Length: 375
Image (cartoon, rainbow, N blue to C red; front, side):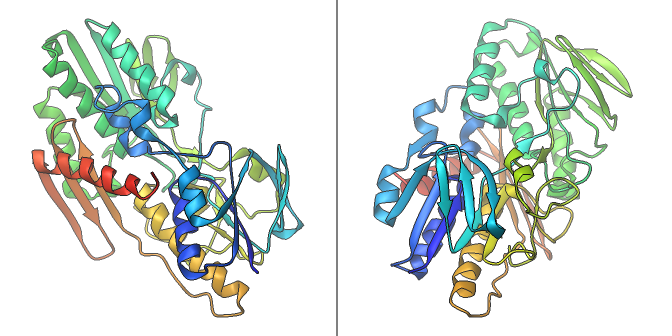
């Protein structure tokens, strides 16, 4: 019987479980994560407005693990040894014949004063803190921004920041107090969101202009103060700073022999395999993969990589050719709480659909459809 370990209970980890079980009803699957829960991070954008609450976004996984016959090991990973065959955790060691690393990424918190900003995609606590701050304010300046990992172009999350920006504008208008606020969007990139495609960038900037959102673009970040954003191209006051830094690898990678990219992620090939190790694969935000510079870090991409990783791991363990590859595909709906703009990008096509109410409801319907398989 094949003994397979998965690290992580996010999108990539759970998709790997489904793919493994689809192909092999009898292999032993052990999943390691700090909590037996899926946190549906794409819905964090609706927490500040109250459209979603904690209970709507956190999905307990006990039923899913039982249906999939998964042995759950509740722990935090601390290291990896024996060429990947032994996973070290704060609750004991877990051995395996094959390993899939799907433990997500870590935000880079090196910018001076970053403790003065809220990083929304860190989780529900952060999104709830944004909600509390917004409803405690009657006026002021709110700054939204994001940056990347200069050594890993794909290791960034810009899309959600546009959603928090437009969603906040919508919320303030619905409350009838938008005129009391200045909204400022800042980024070291001159064309933020360029991985979405040129047309999408133009529409995003046009939307900011229509909503009277100021921009501060093309200037490297220097520091945050409690009520100030400071860049190499100037500074401005801000009563609330919402900022998404770039991403890098997990701290436990340092206690392993995993090959790392310049940006600190686990280096993998087009088959999601860690080439320097036998039967070790990576999927999602943990990995650095070959592909175009616009390849996204998003749930859809993590799912595609996890499917390829699971297929190839089973093939390798069975002595077969492990040649499955993942499709590089960006699909997202940039939501503004009542409308949405859809962007789709592949190697050959880049499609942008304008803001409509239908796309907002499409995103909410997809959330229901996706989560029902884990409830």
